[in-house]
Length: 357
Image 1 (cartoon, helix red, strand yellow):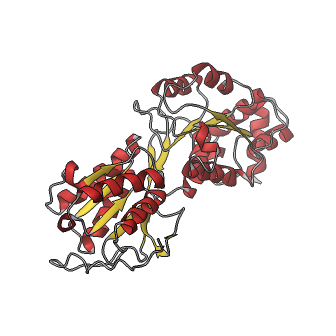
Image 2 (cartoon, one colour):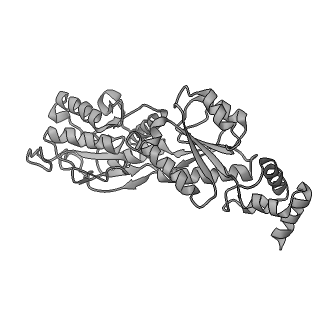
Image 3 (cartoon, rainbow, N blue to C red):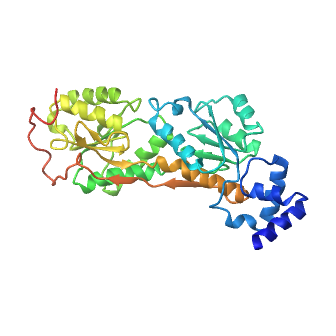
């Protein structure tokens, strides 16, 4: 009864029909934008929106901006799956989902404004877009906008992202707990998010009173590909005396872990008997060359759902404080990392080991 009274009061205040008010509050598409705005403003004033956070979405059309590679699973499986998670979060709602490719940096401002100003664009998600000018334009347009795995450095747009720094620290800390002190980190640092992971790794080193030395402890690879990682690790192994080899490699992705394991294999080293390998990813390759991969899972499939939920909050409470939701990683313990005792670096190398040539 109270809900009907509220709908009737909104209808009276806005001079719209009860059926129109009901359609707007149910998230239906067959109402004008002008009527929709009047109903939502009045509903906020009357407190009707407070109990609708988990209800039907209050939008009918959503635009997702992302780098071109995000729309191709072979080019960027992480972003591709994030987009799929956005679509999955909307499947039970009457929402039209549209896409627009945009460069990470130096994006096409005219194209962005044209798509944002379309009548069908009620809200937007920016996935992995680092261009501060695009962020400025998103603020100026004034439509609800969520960021995924990127940040507005001027703190005006809400965002959701993995807690990259904490994820890096968690991964390094696990290796320390397993007795490893000589660890080489194999990372791609193409975005600030990867720099955050490295900062977390450095934090773990500091917590154990160890000095992190880039020349000794870090191998940088230009991409996340297995081929480039294998080449870089192989070059490093060729230049490193056997007595100076680490007990473990911490690698910034599953495909990079595949390349690392391949390089180790070709140098006669077994995983984990001779050298342990741990990944920060853990989704794409649960097992590499029959070695179940220990990893910290980066939250990926959760990003889209959380972004849609937070977007709903912006409709319900447009004046609420803006912040960033950081999602934790999850440790998946498998068999690619072995526990070692201090003073016991590795077993003798057996060249007829786990892998085929």
